[in-house]
Image (cartoon, rainbow, N blue to C red; front, side):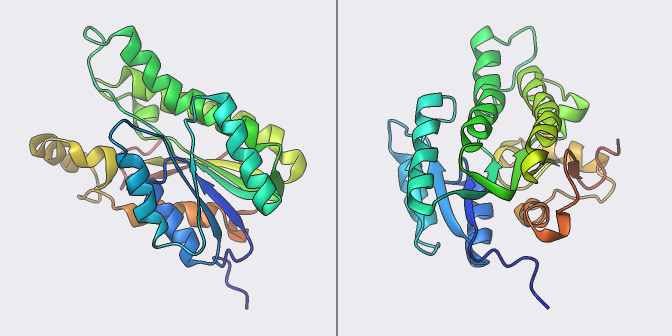
Length: 251
């Protein structure tokens, strides 16, 4: 019997894969045979480039591409590079995201727009430009959040962006279905890596009390969800939001 989680021959791009969940996802696909593209955005200290290189050391013949997902020209250039090198793209995971928490009264317009620009506009840009190289039977997975479903205190910008990603996922699922490309979203709850890891201990403890399974999730929970949605096992699932939150949100 063929292993449904064998991605040999597939080309995978995970945006924002120099650290956190993105890094864990790209490593998981590489371990299962995929040809992987690591993406990072340049920063003045060069930390993101260094992190991307560190991730790439664990991959098989990876390609590393610097690209700001909010810049359509850079995104188009990234897709051209992937298309020229591999002839196409099979799996796209829109993972890039930022967070800037403040209450509405304290939130500046720049704080609001910058988060929406990276999280939502970035997802749109990458999806739009990837359309030119995505192969038939491909997969797109967008990273939403429980925050986009519940509207968490102090996250007017983040919640709005992640709720909109759910809507974008549903529209994309309808439009890409013509090429038998599925488009789904994963909505993580509180995960012990990335953005959730920086929460104060008392905040974390308070959220854990509200999670029926009584613990934070870990990166593997999200990675496994992504692997499933990108596998043949999920070939008839599209426009779906997969909640991975320990029961924190049951909608």
